[in-house]
Image 1 (cartoon, rainbow over the protein chains, first blue to last red):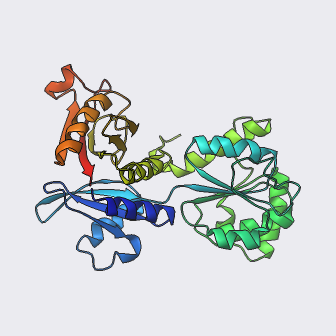
Image 2 (cartoon, rainbow over the protein chains, first blue to last red):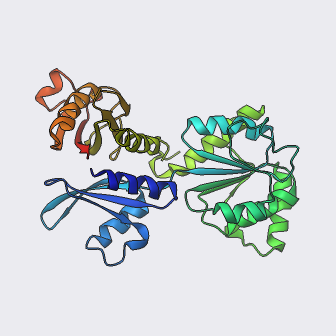
Amino acid sequence: MNLDILALLNAERAARRAAILVTDMAGGEQRVVREAELAGDPLEEALAERFRSGKSGLVEADGRELFLTVQVPPVRVVAVGAVHISQAFAPLARVAGLDVTIVDPRTAFATPERFPDVPLLAEWPDEALPRLGLDRYTALLALTHDPKIDDPALQAALRSSAFYIGALGSRKTHARRVERLTQAGFAEADMARIHAPIGLDIGAVSPAEIAVSILAELVATLRRDRRRAP
Amino acid sequence: MLSGDDDILREAERWRREGRGVAIATVVETWGSAPRPTGSHLVIDGEGTFLGSVSGGCVEGAVITEALDVIEDGKPRMLEFGVADETAWRVGLSCGGRIRVYVERVS
Protein backbone atom coordinates (compact mmCIF):
# COMPACT_ATOMS: atom_id res chain seq x y z
CA MET A 1 0.00 0.00 0.00
CA ASN A 2 1.22 3.43 -0.97
CA LEU A 3 1.72 5.76 2.00
CA ASP A 4 -0.41 8.38 0.20
CA ILE A 5 -3.32 5.96 0.05
CA LEU A 6 -2.95 5.09 3.73
CA ALA A 7 -2.84 8.82 4.59
CA LEU A 8 -5.95 9.45 2.46
CA LEU A 9 -7.85 6.67 4.25
CA ASN A 10 -6.85 8.08 7.63
CA ALA A 11 -7.84 11.62 6.60
CA GLU A 12 -11.26 10.46 5.38
CA ARG A 13 -11.87 8.64 8.66
CA ALA A 14 -10.85 11.69 10.68
CA ALA A 15 -13.31 13.79 8.65
CA ARG A 16 -16.07 11.23 9.34
CA ARG A 17 -16.53 10.32 5.67
CA ALA A 18 -17.03 6.75 4.46
CA ALA A 19 -14.52 5.42 1.91
CA ILE A 20 -13.65 2.11 0.28
CA LEU A 21 -10.18 0.84 -0.58
CA VAL A 22 -10.23 -1.32 -3.72
CA THR A 23 -7.33 -3.79 -3.94
CA ASP A 24 -6.65 -5.98 -6.98
CA MET A 25 -5.69 -9.30 -5.43
CA ALA A 26 -3.61 -10.35 -8.45
CA GLY A 27 -1.42 -7.30 -8.97
CA GLY A 28 -1.88 -5.43 -5.72
CA GLU A 29 -3.01 -2.17 -7.43
CA GLN A 30 -5.12 0.00 -5.18
CA ARG A 31 -7.45 3.00 -5.29
CA VAL A 32 -9.75 4.75 -2.84
CA VAL A 33 -13.39 5.62 -3.61
CA ARG A 34 -15.17 8.20 -1.46
CA GLU A 35 -18.89 7.82 -0.97
CA ALA A 36 -19.51 11.24 -2.57
CA GLU A 37 -17.63 10.19 -5.73
CA LEU A 38 -19.51 6.94 -6.27
CA ALA A 39 -21.57 7.99 -9.31
CA GLY A 40 -20.13 6.70 -12.57
CA ASP A 41 -17.58 4.40 -10.94
CA PRO A 42 -17.17 1.10 -12.85
CA LEU A 43 -17.95 -0.70 -9.58
CA GLU A 44 -20.76 1.68 -8.58
CA GLU A 45 -23.34 -0.97 -7.76
CA ALA A 46 -21.05 -3.22 -5.72
CA LEU A 47 -19.56 -0.26 -3.87
CA ALA A 48 -22.97 1.26 -3.07
CA GLU A 49 -24.03 -2.04 -1.49
CA ARG A 50 -20.81 -2.10 0.58
CA PHE A 51 -21.34 1.46 1.78
CA ARG A 52 -24.82 0.42 2.92
CA SER A 53 -23.73 -2.73 4.75
CA GLY A 54 -20.40 -1.37 6.02
CA LYS A 55 -18.91 -4.85 5.44
CA SER A 56 -15.59 -5.53 3.73
CA GLY A 57 -15.26 -8.43 1.29
CA LEU A 58 -14.14 -9.91 -2.03
CA VAL A 59 -15.88 -9.24 -5.34
CA GLU A 60 -15.32 -10.46 -8.91
CA ALA A 61 -15.22 -7.88 -11.67
CA ASP A 62 -14.14 -8.55 -15.29
CA GLY A 63 -12.52 -11.78 -14.18
CA ARG A 64 -10.45 -10.04 -11.54
CA GLU A 65 -10.63 -10.69 -7.84
CA LEU A 66 -10.93 -7.43 -5.90
CA PHE A 67 -10.95 -6.89 -2.16
CA LEU A 68 -13.08 -4.01 -0.88
CA THR A 69 -11.98 -2.65 2.50
CA VAL A 70 -14.95 -0.65 3.70
CA GLN A 71 -14.11 2.13 6.10
CA VAL A 72 -17.01 3.83 7.82
CA PRO A 73 -16.60 6.64 10.37
CA PRO A 74 -15.97 5.57 13.96
CA VAL A 75 -19.13 5.31 16.04
CA ARG A 76 -19.60 8.44 18.10
CA VAL A 77 -21.77 9.10 21.12
CA VAL A 78 -22.98 12.58 21.99
CA ALA A 79 -24.13 12.55 25.61
CA VAL A 80 -26.22 15.58 26.54
CA GLY A 81 -25.81 15.98 30.28
CA ALA A 82 -22.54 16.20 32.19
CA VAL A 83 -24.15 14.12 34.91
CA HIS A 84 -23.06 11.27 37.18
CA ILE A 85 -24.14 8.61 34.65
CA SER A 86 -22.06 10.32 31.94
CA GLN A 87 -19.01 10.26 34.23
CA ALA A 88 -19.31 6.47 34.37
CA PHE A 89 -20.33 6.13 30.72
CA ALA A 90 -17.41 8.03 29.16
CA PRO A 91 -14.58 5.67 30.23
CA LEU A 92 -16.67 2.54 29.55
CA ALA A 93 -17.52 3.73 26.05
CA ARG A 94 -13.90 4.56 25.33
CA VAL A 95 -12.84 0.99 26.17
CA ALA A 96 -15.56 -0.22 23.78
CA GLY A 97 -13.97 1.89 21.02
CA LEU A 98 -16.58 4.66 20.86
CA ASP A 99 -15.81 8.38 20.58
CA VAL A 100 -17.67 10.27 23.31
CA THR A 101 -18.50 13.99 23.44
CA ILE A 102 -20.34 15.55 26.37
CA VAL A 103 -22.66 18.55 25.91
CA ASP A 104 -24.11 20.50 28.84
CA PRO A 105 -24.70 24.27 29.06
CA ARG A 106 -24.54 24.16 32.88
CA THR A 107 -20.95 25.14 33.57
CA ALA A 108 -21.09 23.75 37.11
CA PHE A 109 -21.59 20.29 35.60
CA ALA A 110 -19.45 20.55 32.49
CA THR A 111 -16.03 20.82 34.12
CA PRO A 112 -12.78 19.12 33.11
CA GLU A 113 -12.34 18.02 36.75
CA ARG A 114 -15.49 15.92 36.43
CA PHE A 115 -14.60 14.74 32.91
CA PRO A 116 -10.84 14.34 32.53
CA ASP A 117 -9.77 13.66 28.92
CA VAL A 118 -13.32 13.79 27.51
CA PRO A 119 -14.29 16.35 24.84
CA LEU A 120 -16.65 18.66 26.69
CA LEU A 121 -18.86 21.41 25.26
CA ALA A 122 -20.43 23.79 27.81
CA GLU A 123 -23.08 24.88 25.34
CA TRP A 124 -26.79 24.47 24.62
CA PRO A 125 -27.63 21.57 22.31
CA ASP A 126 -28.95 24.08 19.74
CA GLU A 127 -25.45 25.49 19.37
CA ALA A 128 -23.35 22.37 19.82
CA LEU A 129 -25.26 19.69 17.88
CA PRO A 130 -25.38 21.39 14.45
CA ARG A 131 -21.64 21.91 14.68
CA LEU A 132 -21.01 18.29 15.69
CA GLY A 133 -23.27 17.03 12.88
CA LEU A 134 -25.37 14.04 13.86
CA ASP A 135 -24.87 11.38 11.16
CA ARG A 136 -25.91 7.73 10.88
CA TYR A 137 -22.82 6.67 12.84
CA THR A 138 -23.79 8.84 15.80
CA ALA A 139 -25.79 7.99 18.94
CA LEU A 140 -27.44 10.69 21.04
CA LEU A 141 -28.12 10.28 24.75
CA ALA A 142 -30.39 12.77 26.55
CA LEU A 143 -29.40 12.46 30.20
CA THR A 144 -30.04 15.80 31.94
CA HIS A 145 -33.58 15.10 33.19
CA ASP A 146 -34.27 18.74 32.28
CA PRO A 147 -36.67 19.24 29.34
CA LYS A 148 -35.12 22.64 28.60
CA ILE A 149 -31.90 20.84 27.66
CA ASP A 150 -33.06 17.33 26.71
CA ASP A 151 -35.94 18.32 24.41
CA PRO A 152 -33.98 20.42 21.92
CA ALA A 153 -31.32 17.69 21.81
CA LEU A 154 -33.94 15.02 21.08
CA GLN A 155 -35.54 17.20 18.41
CA ALA A 156 -32.19 17.64 16.68
CA ALA A 157 -31.57 13.88 16.89
CA LEU A 158 -35.02 13.05 15.47
CA ARG A 159 -34.34 15.35 12.51
CA SER A 160 -31.01 13.55 11.91
CA SER A 161 -30.15 10.01 10.86
CA ALA A 162 -28.60 9.15 14.27
CA PHE A 163 -28.65 5.34 14.65
CA TYR A 164 -29.52 5.43 18.33
CA ILE A 165 -31.48 7.93 20.41
CA GLY A 166 -31.94 7.34 24.13
CA ALA A 167 -33.59 9.40 26.84
CA LEU A 168 -33.29 9.04 30.58
CA GLY A 169 -36.44 9.14 32.71
CA SER A 170 -39.31 7.03 33.96
CA ARG A 171 -42.22 5.91 31.79
CA LYS A 172 -44.24 8.78 33.26
CA THR A 173 -41.55 11.31 32.40
CA HIS A 174 -41.35 9.86 28.93
CA ALA A 175 -45.14 10.08 28.42
CA ARG A 176 -44.97 13.81 29.15
CA ARG A 177 -41.99 14.11 26.82
CA VAL A 178 -43.92 12.37 24.04
CA GLU A 179 -46.75 14.90 24.54
CA ARG A 180 -44.36 17.81 24.21
CA LEU A 181 -42.69 16.35 21.10
CA THR A 182 -46.09 15.66 19.52
CA GLN A 183 -47.07 19.28 20.10
CA ALA A 184 -43.79 20.28 18.46
CA GLY A 185 -44.93 18.40 15.36
CA PHE A 186 -43.18 15.02 15.66
CA ALA A 187 -45.00 11.86 14.57
CA GLU A 188 -45.49 8.49 16.21
CA ALA A 189 -42.79 6.98 14.03
CA ASP A 190 -40.36 9.55 15.43
CA MET A 191 -41.22 8.58 19.02
CA ALA A 192 -40.53 4.93 18.17
CA ARG A 193 -36.89 5.88 17.50
CA ILE A 194 -36.41 6.99 21.11
CA HIS A 195 -35.19 4.33 23.54
CA ALA A 196 -36.93 5.30 26.77
CA PRO A 197 -36.47 4.50 29.52
CA ILE A 198 -32.89 4.37 28.25
CA GLY A 199 -30.77 1.21 28.49
CA LEU A 200 -31.27 -2.55 28.50
CA ASP A 201 -33.37 -3.81 31.39
CA ILE A 202 -30.65 -5.37 33.56
CA GLY A 203 -32.04 -4.01 36.80
CA ALA A 204 -29.38 -1.31 36.94
CA VAL A 205 -29.32 0.80 40.11
CA SER A 206 -26.09 2.83 40.37
CA PRO A 207 -24.93 5.38 37.77
CA ALA A 208 -22.22 2.95 36.65
CA GLU A 209 -24.73 0.13 36.21
CA ILE A 210 -27.03 2.42 34.22
CA ALA A 211 -24.02 3.33 32.06
CA VAL A 212 -23.44 -0.40 31.40
CA SER A 213 -27.10 -0.86 30.42
CA ILE A 214 -26.93 2.13 28.03
CA LEU A 215 -23.72 0.86 26.45
CA ALA A 216 -25.23 -2.63 26.06
CA GLU A 217 -28.34 -1.24 24.36
CA LEU A 218 -26.20 0.88 22.08
CA VAL A 219 -24.10 -2.11 20.96
CA ALA A 220 -27.26 -4.23 20.56
CA THR A 221 -28.68 -1.55 18.23
CA LEU A 222 -25.44 -1.19 16.31
CA ARG A 223 -25.14 -4.97 15.82
CA ARG A 224 -28.82 -5.84 15.50
CA ASP A 225 -28.34 -7.78 12.25
CA ARG A 226 -25.99 -10.20 14.04
CA ARG A 227 -28.29 -10.90 16.97
CA ARG A 228 -30.02 -14.23 17.42
CA ALA A 229 -33.80 -13.99 17.51
CA PRO A 230 -34.98 -13.60 21.12
CA MET B 1 -16.69 -0.15 14.13
CA LEU B 2 -16.03 -1.08 17.70
CA SER B 3 -12.81 -2.93 16.91
CA GLY B 4 -10.43 -0.02 17.19
CA ASP B 5 -9.08 -0.74 13.69
CA ASP B 6 -9.15 3.04 13.24
CA ASP B 7 -6.25 3.67 15.56
CA ILE B 8 -4.32 0.80 14.03
CA LEU B 9 -4.15 2.35 10.55
CA ARG B 10 -3.31 5.72 12.07
CA GLU B 11 -0.41 4.08 13.87
CA ALA B 12 0.70 2.37 10.65
CA GLU B 13 0.90 5.77 8.95
CA ARG B 14 2.80 7.26 11.89
CA TRP B 15 5.30 4.38 11.96
CA ARG B 16 5.97 4.72 8.23
CA ARG B 17 6.49 8.48 8.52
CA GLU B 18 9.07 7.76 11.23
CA GLY B 19 10.91 5.74 8.61
CA ARG B 20 10.07 2.30 9.98
CA GLY B 21 9.34 -0.62 7.66
CA VAL B 22 5.61 -1.37 7.91
CA ALA B 23 3.30 -4.11 6.65
CA ILE B 24 -0.49 -4.32 6.86
CA ALA B 25 -2.22 -7.71 7.09
CA THR B 26 -5.95 -7.84 6.27
CA VAL B 27 -8.43 -10.69 6.68
CA VAL B 28 -9.92 -10.97 3.16
CA GLU B 29 -11.99 -14.14 3.48
CA THR B 30 -13.32 -16.35 6.26
CA TRP B 31 -15.07 -19.72 6.33
CA GLY B 32 -16.79 -21.32 9.28
CA SER B 33 -16.40 -19.80 12.70
CA ALA B 34 -13.56 -17.34 12.27
CA PRO B 35 -12.51 -15.26 15.25
CA ARG B 36 -12.14 -11.89 13.47
CA PRO B 37 -14.35 -10.54 10.69
CA THR B 38 -13.31 -9.83 7.10
CA GLY B 39 -11.50 -6.48 6.91
CA SER B 40 -9.73 -6.83 10.28
CA HIS B 41 -6.16 -5.57 10.33
CA LEU B 42 -2.84 -6.43 11.92
CA VAL B 43 0.00 -3.96 11.37
CA ILE B 44 3.62 -4.99 11.82
CA ASP B 45 6.88 -3.04 11.80
CA GLY B 46 10.32 -4.26 10.80
CA GLU B 47 11.16 -5.15 14.39
CA GLY B 48 8.10 -7.40 14.73
CA THR B 49 6.16 -4.89 16.82
CA PHE B 50 2.46 -5.38 16.05
CA LEU B 51 -0.98 -3.93 16.74
CA GLY B 52 -4.47 -5.31 16.10
CA SER B 53 -5.35 -8.91 15.24
CA VAL B 54 -6.45 -11.18 12.41
CA SER B 55 -7.44 -14.09 14.66
CA GLY B 56 -7.88 -14.60 18.36
CA GLY B 57 -4.11 -14.95 18.70
CA CYS B 58 -3.84 -18.33 16.95
CA VAL B 59 -1.97 -17.37 13.79
CA GLU B 60 -0.57 -13.92 14.52
CA GLY B 61 2.92 -15.33 15.02
CA ALA B 62 2.98 -16.84 11.53
CA VAL B 63 1.54 -13.67 9.96
CA ILE B 64 4.23 -11.56 11.63
CA THR B 65 6.98 -13.86 10.32
CA GLU B 66 5.64 -13.56 6.76
CA ALA B 67 5.16 -9.80 7.21
CA LEU B 68 8.86 -9.36 7.95
CA ASP B 69 9.62 -10.96 4.54
CA VAL B 70 7.05 -8.68 2.89
CA ILE B 71 8.70 -5.63 4.46
CA GLU B 72 12.01 -6.93 3.14
CA ASP B 73 11.10 -7.67 -0.51
CA GLY B 74 7.94 -5.56 -0.99
CA LYS B 75 5.96 -8.42 -2.59
CA PRO B 76 2.42 -8.83 -1.25
CA ARG B 77 1.46 -12.32 -0.09
CA MET B 78 -1.75 -14.23 0.44
CA LEU B 79 -1.74 -16.54 3.46
CA GLU B 80 -4.28 -19.19 4.34
CA PHE B 81 -4.83 -20.78 7.73
CA GLY B 82 -7.26 -23.36 8.97
CA VAL B 83 -7.89 -26.96 9.88
CA ALA B 84 -8.10 -28.00 6.21
CA ASP B 85 -4.64 -26.62 5.61
CA GLU B 86 -1.52 -28.71 6.12
CA THR B 87 -0.10 -25.92 8.26
CA ALA B 88 -2.83 -26.68 10.79
CA TRP B 89 -0.38 -29.00 12.49
CA ARG B 90 1.96 -26.12 13.09
CA VAL B 91 -0.28 -23.08 13.27
CA GLY B 92 -4.01 -23.25 12.82
CA LEU B 93 -7.32 -22.07 14.10
CA SER B 94 -8.54 -24.07 17.06
CA CYS B 95 -12.07 -22.81 16.43
CA GLY B 96 -12.23 -24.90 13.25
CA GLY B 97 -12.59 -21.99 10.85
CA ARG B 98 -10.43 -20.99 7.91
CA ILE B 99 -9.15 -17.55 6.99
CA ARG B 100 -7.25 -15.91 4.13
CA VAL B 101 -4.96 -13.04 5.03
CA TYR B 102 -3.47 -10.52 2.57
CA VAL B 103 -0.14 -9.01 3.64
CA GLU B 104 1.27 -5.90 1.92
CA ARG B 105 4.05 -3.41 2.54
CA VAL B 106 3.43 0.30 3.12
CA SER B 107 5.80 2.00 0.66
